[in-house]
Image (cartoon, rainbow, N blue to C red; front, side, top):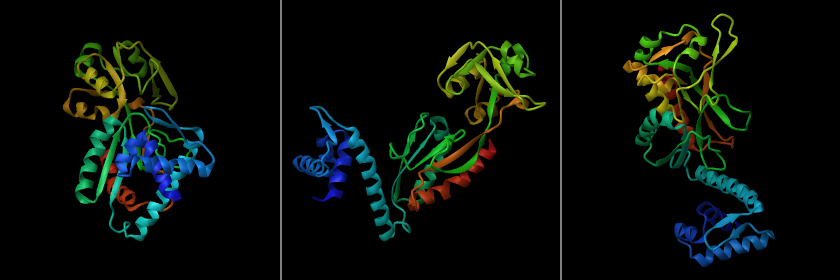
Amino acid sequence: MDRLEAMRLLLRVADRGSFSAASRDLGVPLATVSRKVNELETHLGAKLLVRTTRKVALTDTGAAYLASARRILEDIEETERIASGEFHAPRGELTLTAPVFFGRLHILPIVADFLAAYPEINVRLLLSDRNLHLLDEHVDMAVRIGRLPDSTMIATNIGSMRTVVCASPKLIDACGLPARPEDVAALPCVNFEFLSPASSWPFRSAEDGRAIEVEFSPRLSVSTAEAAVDAAAQGVGATRVLHYQCVEKVHQGALRLVLEDFEVEPIPVHLIHAARGTLPSKMRIFLDFAVPVLRARLRAL
């Protein structure tokens, strides 16, 4: 039995959720896929998959085995790329993930330039406000906005991001310019729930740096930054978002930053990837290509 081939077949069956889909993807007869996976289970003396009439699912043993098998196959592919000169002629698929709004504004333009510069590399760009697990979801690199937990990931700092309060000139004319954080409680507010799940906003004292928490009753609560910014620009209320999320409206004059002297410490922004030996050239080259551009973009905000 060719165990590497069986691993590859098992991996595709698990990823696609069925033997027939794996068979079509790989151009291997369905009977062959089924037989080789059965042989692997027999060799291991363990059941790796639960088969139903509609799909297959991994057993607990299968999930653990598949995670190890995936790492083994990736290491083999990396070794073969080195031997075949891939580290000098980058090619393959690069999978990136970033928050939706940040990815559209800042990562997509870089990816477009990168694709033009490296025609043998393809990119999958997964935009999600959920932090995808790099290994489990087969992601090469991720943008992370916020403080990183301790992990085995390698992080490259690309800058920092302010958290700001902004309001429309119309609202400021009607309610007055807030001078201190406590003034927020008297303003109509739009709460971006992802950033501030509780109905309170943190600030930092301009005098001594102590933390200040201001509670308020939001006129509107929304689940996306775009909605919070649009509502604030229409005069519904002041809102609190990350600076990049409102900077375009600020430049247009639709919003104005307030309470800048009381902002909390800026939060770091990183590009992260798994710590797995020598980086494939597609990842190393993307880092070299993207990091200086991202640092310049964040400094310009």
